[in-house]
Image (cartoon, one colour):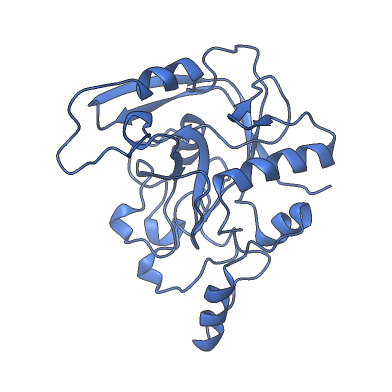
Length: 266
């Protein structure tokens, strides 16, 4: 069984921000656990039998440039949100835990009472990243994160930068991390959130508050994930997320900010 080096985090609160709706609010979180580092390529391969260290073309380009090719201790990237969900279930079964996700043709359902591995909610991710700080970074960015300032061609081995106060590494920079939540259902349909920034991102965009998203079957050379654990008895609002709120957000109508285009739908 793989040790994902989970850190137990105490209950707490985190302030979240929805720029489109101009809304700020505070979420109360129950205790949960989250991995000290992102899932590595070696861990991903051990569970799935697949090599998610990098796309073949990226690997070839790195060799041609005499760059250091990502190894098993670098974050698993080129992983879709759906890949991450399947990984969580497979790792849970291997460890003897209850899988967190039910996979149906109509979509993915999170069994919030399950004790298996899962993706963190966006509220959990931001709480874990910020460690009660209010600035954009939990440490000087050059010490905490790999960014475009480092001139890298691929993700670096995890755990080499300064950790935050919770003992978590690479929450900023190196590789973006998928979360459970939808990005903005009214605008982007089924797009899911990823957070944290990557090795190729400009320093100004690698911040605890920056959020991006993509289709659940999208992958990228600087996009990976880390796992969390924690089952909850409340089925309605769980760690800042609820299915009812997703439905309400998806049904929102009205003008969108200039420059944003809603995703086409049938």
